Image (cartoon, rainbow, N blue to C red; front, top):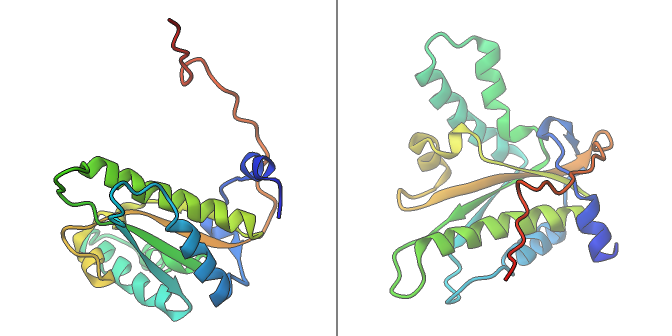
Length: 189
């Protein structure tokens, strides 16, 4: 396993269309999900859950996405609808992180939502540690209730993002992201 700091310094997002198979095995998926559930979780609420899309399930979910897209875009071309249909089929594995934040007497909803975001980031990091590439994205269909209903997401839940996982078809760009004064503030007393 790579050194933790090296792992964090070398992680890069890879476009879903640049992810290929083979994807993670069942034991690797179980490991990814176990790691994703080991995030800060004030009150041990587990304010998130996962929906795993692999194999034909990716294509079935794509049908819901394509249907909603076509309903909203009467002028859509067959190629555009087909592109939407294949959204979750671009990577061998897609895991939706669903935020189940709800009112609580002690833990604010925003804190529960951050826990779901931390879970998605842990999925990305765990995939990288296992030798896979990943991309965490939230696209239009993550907000479309028609699509979410077909994916089994209740009206009280929100999608924190879809994590696409696979092998990188090409080496991710190794660019440095310098710390900018605009994003780093030092508090001085």
